[in-house]
Length: 391
Image (cartoon, rainbow, N blue to C red; front, side, top):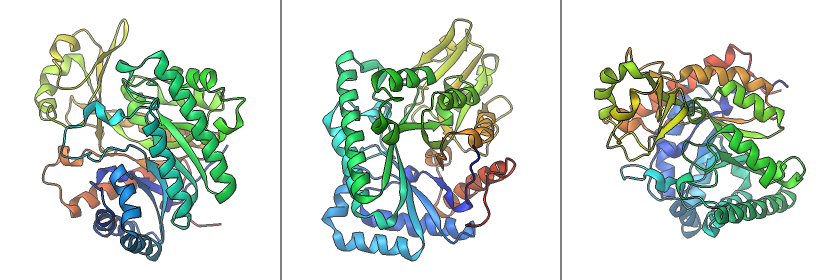
C-alpha cells in the first residue's frame, strides 16, 4: 500500500476550543481556523471538529446562524473530515476526569447521540467530505464494566453499523465510527481491540461492521500503554482491521530514578480537569495508577519507566532533561502510515494548551497549532507521504 496526503488534509482536533453554540463555532473559525489556513498557505483545509450535545441542538434551534456558519465555511473552502464524538457540554475549565467516557456504548443515549451526528452530516453533506471518521469511546470505562454492559454495547454497535450502511446508500456519505483505544478503558490494548472486533463483532465476516466500524489509533494512548506503536499498527493491519483515523498525540515519560527531579513539574498538573492515567513498566508487566494526582512516590520506585496520559505538543521531545515525551512513537507511526490497509484521517490532538500555558491567547494558540502541524508535515515528507498537488 502507498498513501499520500495533501497539506490541506492534515488536521488538528477542534476539541482544543470551547464550543457549545453555533456562534462560538463561527468565532472559532474566525479566530483560529482561518488564520491557521492563511499561515499554512492553503487554498482549502480539512477540519476535525467536536459537536457536543448543546452544539448539535443549537444547529437546529438557530437555522439562520447555522446558515451563516456553513456559508463562512464554503467561502473559505473549509471541509469537515473528522469528528471527535463525546457529548459532554463542558471540556475546558471544569473537572471532567472519567466522565468523558460516559455515556458508555451500553447506553441508548450514546447510540442516539452518535446517530444524531451522522444524521446531521447527511443533511449538511455539502460541507462534509464524502468519507468521514468519527472517533468514539472504546465501549466504556473498564472499572465499571460488566458482561451485561458488553452485550448491550455489542447490540448498539451492530445497530449503529446497520444505520450507517442505510445512510450511505441514501446519501452517498460514508461514515466510519472508530473505537479509540484508551488507558483504563474497556479496550486499552491492541490485543483487547482485536479480540473484541473479531470475537464480539465478527469483524472479518460481517461486511457492515467492517465498512462502518473501525479503529481510531491515538499514538499517545498506545505509547502510554508501553506498546510498540509500529507493532500495534502492524497487528491491526494483518488482522485487516480498518484504521479510520490516526490521532497524532504525545505523552510524558520518565525513568523511575528521575522521579525526584520531575516531581515538581508534575505537581503543576495535579489540578488538571482531565484524567491523566499513569502506566508503570515493571518486571511483572504494566501497572496502573488511575490519575496523576494519586501518590506516585509509593509506586514509581518499583518501576523502570512511567508514562503519563497527558497530551503534550507533538513537536516537543522533552520538557526537561529528565521529563521526556513519547515523540519517538509519533515518528514510528508516521513511518508506518504508507503500509496501512486504508488511508486514515490524520489529526493532531493537543487539547491541553491552557494547562501548559495559562497565558495562551487566540493569536499564540494559532501559532502553536501551526507549529505542530508543520512539524508533522515535515516528518511526513521524509517518508514521501505529502502530495503537493491535486491530480
